[in-house]
Image 1 (cartoon, one colour):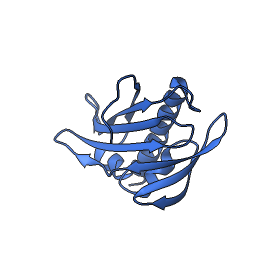
Image 2: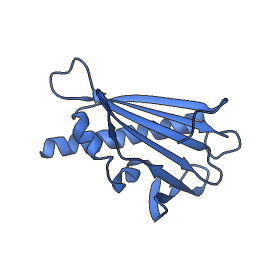
Image 3: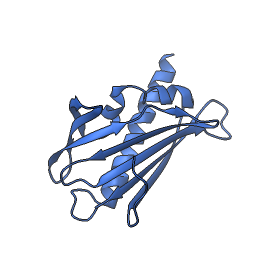
Amino acid sequence: MRPTATGATRTRVTRTICADPTSTALLLAGPAAVDLWPGVRRVGEVGGRVLVEAELAEAATAATVRALPPQRTPTSYVTKFAFVGPSLPATDGELTLAYAPGSDSPATSAVLTLDSTDLDGSLLNRYDLTVMAERFLDNLARAAEERCRAA
């Protein structure tokens, strides 16, 4: 992934998920993690990157996504990813999953950060990125909580 560029747009969203961080991180370990991103449909894989079609408000476009499996740190799981495509800002992302403090049952504090460059002139703006990031965390929470209830 790239270092944060000067002038990059940073998008940061958070959410508490009613499932433990380990089981939530497992959802991100496989190729299905891309399917949690809103408006994205997987169309192939090339050189360790996933090729997707993204349905945006303005138009559909293609993008390539590189997602690394979650890495365990002493206090959390961290997943890094990047996407780029025609008319899209080059974006590096990081999702951190840690135990949420003060919960009676295991819960996850999820923090998703996106660093995007070349936002001007792309099909996305700051608001679009925020909404997409929030919807991704909604989808992740739904999948993790359903998995937790089924266990």
